[in-house]
Image 1 (tube, helix red, strand yellow):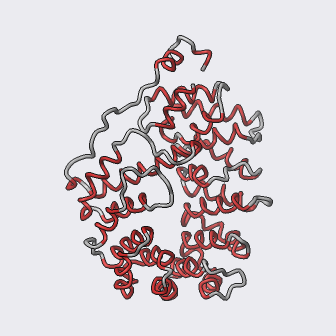
Image 2 (tube, helix red, strand yellow):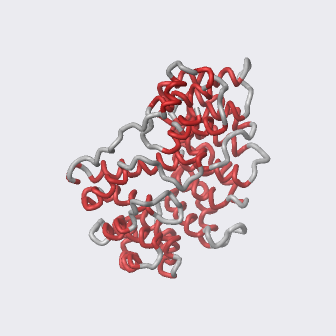
Length: 394
């Protein structure tokens, strides 16, 4: 089992038998912490075992379906990662009893479920008293991923504006959009600094959210444009990028930031300039310069953001295709993240690379390079355990 767990953590394309071993270990109670964490991160890689995992989840929930705990969480999250609706009853129970994950990467596994089904689960978690800082910020983060489907949560999210979670609440309201129009005055207060809980990092997301819920860009253009001109560029550029051509008055200022000494600012400026003007020529070289094939996943550099923005630009970013293809063909996963989130972080990077190459399109000069090994096989001792020589030890 240990060899199989190591293989799925280390390689992007492990032999499917490795995942079979992980599922067998977890569902036969010969599991370990590492096997459980691997299963949570598996997603569609274990979809062929969905029925067995669902059956094992029911067993751990007990006769009345009310049990909660680590075993229930691991199996429910594994199903959620496949988009399997059978995860929902257990997730609701976990939400009621504080059993959902506090780690943002792990919690985002649930976003594979339909947003309309997931949003009530996250609202249940918000309504629960006693969660600590990470529990609440994670719940708001996942709720933001639900977008407009989170509209029923507006009253509760608005309550969070009066807490230390105001920044995250602003993000959620902006993602919800017009259904949160009733919060426009509160958002204005945060954008202008008049709200009692307003802090220096609140005006830009609040002004952006105001535009998203009202459709009026005036406040967002003023607040975010001022931030970019005043030197707080990295904090205002993503919001100007979202405004797109509406922010045309700031195009020259944004272009001047393409030579910023900060990598995050350069990447954000390149993206914003393309979104505002539609001109990819100045943006593509800046973004391409940040795509490091040796990147191990460290979040202090904007490699994945640069790849994502190149994909958004599409065909005009054709020069990036060969490099993106080589990175996608690498056999080993990103090495920096902890093992409990390594598969998730690497899978997100793989999706970003794949989507970027798809958007750049066939004009990129053909498909990405084929990996030298499509599958990384199990070590021989592990194969013997799987296929009958020593199955009891799995």
